[in-house]
Amino acid sequence: MLRERQYTVKKLGRSYAASGGMLSLDQKKRGIRFMRLGKRHLLAVGTSIFALSMAAVPAQAADPIKIGLSGPFTGGSASMGVSMRDGVKLAVSEINKAGGVLGRPIALVERDEEAKNEVGVQVAQELINKEQVVATLGFINTGVALASQRFYEEAEIPVINNVATGSLITQQFKAPEYKSNYVFRTAANDLIQSEMIADEAVTRQGFKKIAILADSTNYGQLGRTDLEHALAKSDVKPVAEEKFNIGDTDMTSQLLRAKQAGADAVLTYAIGPELAQIANGMAKLGWKVPMIGSWTLAMSTFIDNAGVNGDGAMMPQTFIQLPNTPKRKAFIDAYQAAYKTDRIPSPVSAAQGYDSVYLLAAAINQAKSTDGPKIRAALENLQTKVEGVVTVYDHPYTATDHEAISANIPVFGLVKDGRVVPAHPEDVAGDQAMRIKPKA
Image (spheres, rainbow, N blue to C red):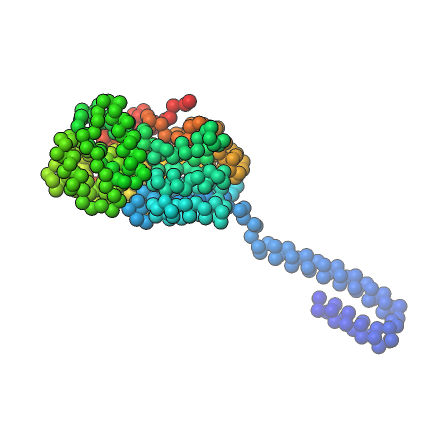
């Protein structure tokens, strides 16, 4: 039909030209009538084509909310970093399947900072300036956190430390020197852990001659100081304090000095690979005394490298891979299915990472914005309870308290046959299974 009308137009044009620009009245009427019909037809065809072309293009998706995710995904701290990352990704997947946040999907921007302070600083600046994230989750190592999070503070972008435990982390930007603090945490800080370790060793088990072995990092040395203060409350002074470096494989000299000092228990602040060297070194010396330390004794790199020598080691835990609540069972099942593993390499890291996503999502929903100051204000006054794997978060933060985990939440774990189990089963029985931070 369209081709026929195009031909008629051409024919009229030829007649017009042949007549020297003169058409008969009948030709004029037919031409005008046809041109009107043709114009309407072409408009209708054009409209139909436009409509079809728009229908073929999917609706514009809402822009994603970019959230940074940084940690050591390679190296000696990788079991913590990868577990944290995998827990975060599980939570993000669940939230996105449920419709996202503010109707927008969450997009993670991952970076491996290799447990190196200088790399952590570079990663922080890249996530802020290039990727323009609205918040960041991560930090496994205390030193990396202390070096890097100042950039988030300056940019007024919230950061949730979901593994690093150094006691200074959430105090780095406290009032009155700083107007607002953008650093939050979902891990049990070292003040909590050192008190627990000292109480377990001295009060619960009755040891009085304590040796402290700590690595030379910020984490190890700050933890050692916290342990000293906690022991002093029970009038206990360590009989030996020994230091070692990351990567050391022979602890014989440090252990011999502790043994010769008459130590009846060894308290530790380090990470998995070096902790395993302590356990193996004690076995070589034929020196069997209890090993009680920070939560990192639960790392797979300690358990696997120490083998039977690691059995009996004890440590505070915010989460033990135990399906003793429906939420925990669902989380464990989802993690095992997603990552094809029976044992989570670092259960604490995975659980705290998972929970940090839901806390951040709740804050963004409450703020109805991705503006940093508004997210921070919402985190400090969350109006909805967040059911997590570690605990149920009910107003977990305030303007002066950025620690989601209180001293009543962690329990002691015990390494047994390659797994971490409750050291004191009564601590996780009945109403004790889910421990909740007291309201301020």
